[in-house]
Structure formats: C-alpha cells, structure tokens
Amino acid sequence: MRVQCVICDKIEELVDDTLQAKRLRNRPIHTHMCEECHDRITQRTKERLATGSFRFYRSSRSIEDDF
Picture (cartoon, rainbow, N blue to C red):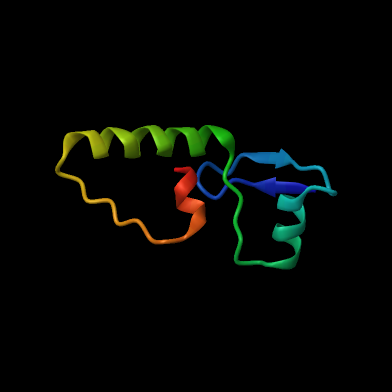
C-alpha cells in the first residue's frame, strides 16, 4: 500500500497486512506521518517543554502515555 506523509508529502510503501495499513484503509480520518517527521516533531516538542514556558495539555488517553 502506498501512503503519503501529511507533512512532507514523501511517498512510502506499507505492507498491506499491517495494522497501520488496515487503519488507513478503513478509517479515512487516520493520516500517515513518516518516521523523519515524527522524530522531528517529537524532538522539537521536548525542546519546547524544556523551556518551561510551553504548556502541554495531556489528555487521559493511553496513546499519550507513550509520549
């Protein structure tokens, strides 16, 4: 399955049998972000958190526990 990153428009290939590919096929609201963009956003968010002037509103969802 070919997917496109929503930030940098890089086209990648996903294996059709993976859970992520199934989610993208069945739920159009889910979007794909490449690893480079994901790592860059994670790094910059951590830098903003370290400044102390950035408020990070966390919800009670288990997805954000991994962050």
